[in-house]
Image 1: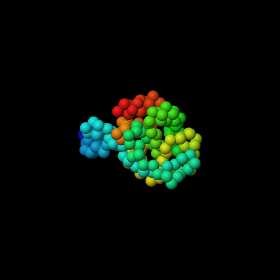
Image 2: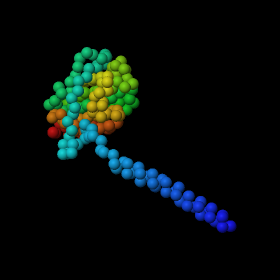
Image 3: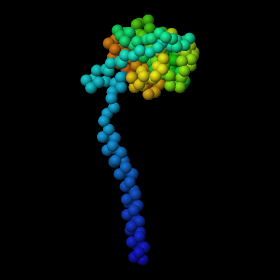
Image 4: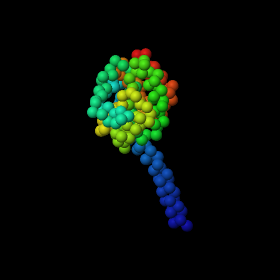
Length: 195
């Protein structure tokens, strides 16, 4: 009888120890997460002083509904204008869903001096597929092809569509990711026009 009670007591200690393993792992995970230094600020975030980050300059080849051209577009040429910067992939269903909204914004704001620029990524998309995307959606504004995905990296874009609204001083006023309602994008442009 005494051996049975001893085994039962040892078994209950083991069960108690095993029950604490998830708690120990959770504490370890929290300690690890708290020890990781913060990531660098993406272009659309605020700096430590609370002012918007500066939009990064880039140069890419222009792509039209007819295909990739040899002409280059330099982003700094837009300085002094409010810019709506649109990152897309031709195969992205969300980009395709948002294309009519972006076209509507262009129709409303291009006459008010807002410059629209679409940066089309090459990952999983060819120049011909990108040209078809531009054709299908009636893109009449500047579109560039990011063959090496360097501008996507420069702006920290990891998902599409991603939008940056940039004021006349070249500062990012707003970064918006994913499908967004027309009113939200319009409000971001209006905010930039006031600065």
